[in-house]
Length: 140
Image 1 (cartoon, rainbow, N blue to C red):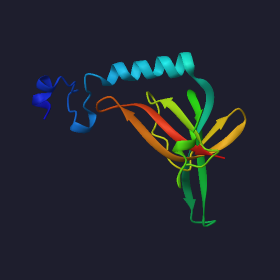
Image 2 (image 1 turned 90 degrees about the vertical axis):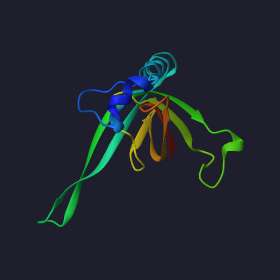
Image 3 (image 1 turned 120 degrees about the vertical axis):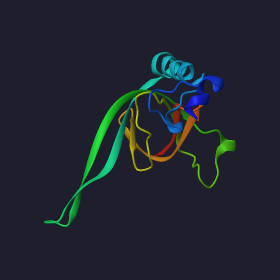
Image 4 (image 1 turned 90 degrees about the horizontal axis):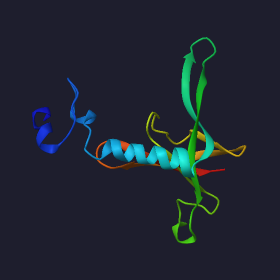
């Protein structure tokens, strides 16, 4: 597939696989998302990644680990016509630039203005092959 990269206008690094290909719109869309959300329209939030951590055979428990990152995000409420069995009235839509971030997952948390929200679902926004944004549905 790498041999056809020139035909598809894809960038391949030496030894790259199909999962690491970059389309012609990927980098520009990532830059736009970062500039608009991270600079112009974004509000400061804290995204906290939660992991199971290490298991201690002595105590029989796992010690969870967390890591937090401050990012800019567009925070919106859901419209009435978007509410359903999965989206509740007080849920928020939080859109963050994807560049430099690990994909958030359910059970991670977002802190907005001192209030902590649980990530319910994550949708990645793509231009081509690389995510430009992550849209999180969060709930208190």
